[in-house]
Length: 449
Image (cartoon, rainbow, N blue to C red; front, side, top):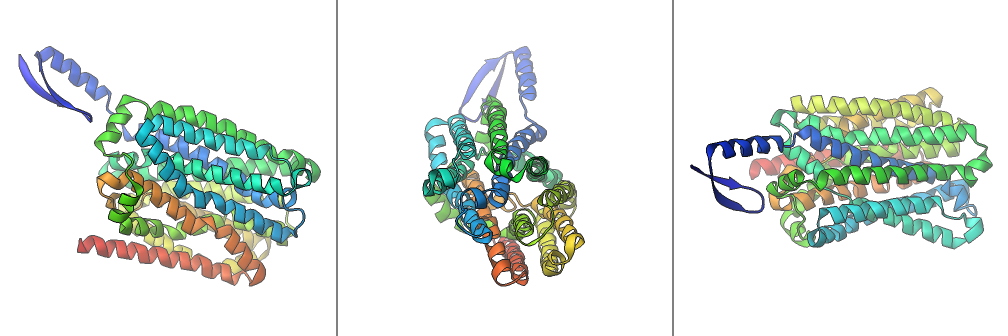
């Protein structure tokens, strides 16, 4: 008879087992180990569904909402108003994160994730059923705003900890590779959303598109959310994932306590990838709005150009994993911030350079976005103490989106319309400068600590 000591995430106990029983238990334990590739599946599924929702709303803010909800304004003013409502989700995300963290502490991660994704699905489907301004008046704008806030709260609440778990369980020399997997959801989501809108714009009359055609992608988004819910629940509800999350101390903590203890890391994390988040909307949402307002170019054709750009972005995301594992994630982000700063100087020339210049800006911009955004998630998450890492990673992501991307379409379109495209260059350049400053500060603090 042999005495062994067995530990798990909840308790430890001494058992007396014979040798054969011990071997059987060891074999089962080995089979219960979860590879990083399995965690990556959950991350990719979750992120792809969220990004599809994200881009469906973003494209509708340009192509639909100015005419449907703001027909009493000029096309420019209507688009700016639509971008104001677009930003509401980014303002709501941190509140959603904090509220749903409390739900998780009380009822568990499965209840939290189910409630968040149902809220996201209902908010998205609700937009599809909204009456136009001509039928409901100002109330339609209020309802659109409330549903957009609901989307933001739900996305904040849908944080499941799997990206942090993936980063912590990835092999030391493959951290960059595994970090980029979840980021592939962005180009995939854009390609599907862009393809849908391009198809409808090409095959429907303007009247049909603005009457009912634009609603179809929101129905699709709702269906994808349902599929994603069950796929993610299947992962996070298993005992093996619960054990890994507990072992890594990936549990929610009080946001006030976390901010007091880890505020420095929170701010640095939010600013470290600012160049990437700023560029995100300057190659996706902003150019689409500018083309629809100031160019005779076919919007559906331009969407095809952007879909090709998203394909280049996917290749850039994959390449970022290889580069980061060779050079380091911080060096990769810093190098990309410098390249983004260089690109910012060419925005006026390229966007005012006809079809070819615009295509070059879109394709180069998407490629750089892939290289940078591929390593933007949780760039300094490891700085957080284990106790605060779960909540810290979620709030860092929320603040990165809010500071870097939440108001980017509104600011870029407003600047270009009233002051000229050169001011968009300064806007993107400031984002690159903030990224480089935050990365340098993070390095200096690491060395000092």
